[in-house]
Length: 304
Image (cartoon, rainbow, N blue to C red):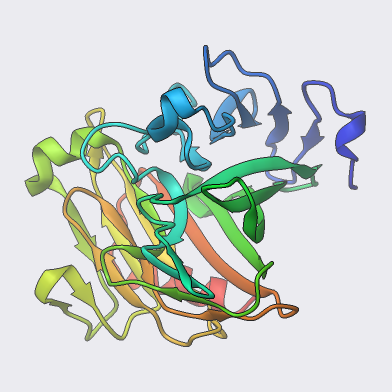
């Protein structure tokens, strides 16, 4: 069942097959900021920050992003603005060399550009999941959009008490062919865990597929998934980042920083009139995962 956004005031509910009742809160109390919460059984699963660009608070408001919350729904376990590398925030996407005609924008550090919330297209509570569809405009210094993004995140219960977050970004060029370029540490679709992990990086572990090894500069080749295990708020988590077969540029390269910024690096071209669809899955668990279990979880995702 799809519910138009115009019919939603603060919440929309659906009872899931796993016994989870999903809802959306369009007006959480965030002080000077704005956002939207996706809740399961009354606890926050995700919070998407949508604060409009404020020149007086540019660094805090130059990009939209989504927080993952702890399994009790009491607070985010991902990073917001500020801290070590302020531009790293929750679930995010960008390239530090975004070539638009003769101009270059840095959509990773948000230099000469911004990523702005342009509205909710749909909020969809399903029988066993909840989906949010957001319009994001990638704008230049004059406030003119050069990329229009439809960002969809679907949350659902996973096996053994885990949570699944399917992240889809559909990028549409508004200015001819756009080259999305960068380097391993400054481009792609990434996750950044809470800033506190930076203070105890030695507690962060990674799992990789069989036969895959970490190379220089935290580079991982030959993997469709990685699993980051950081400690946040005294709790150890396991988070898988998965790229599906059929990814537009083929097998990505993964970056796995010990301060728990991890994700897929790839460099596509975005052609006008040819939307680029990018899909990823993030799995969150507080139950220990091993390599074999991660591979089974990935295989189930890839077989969909």
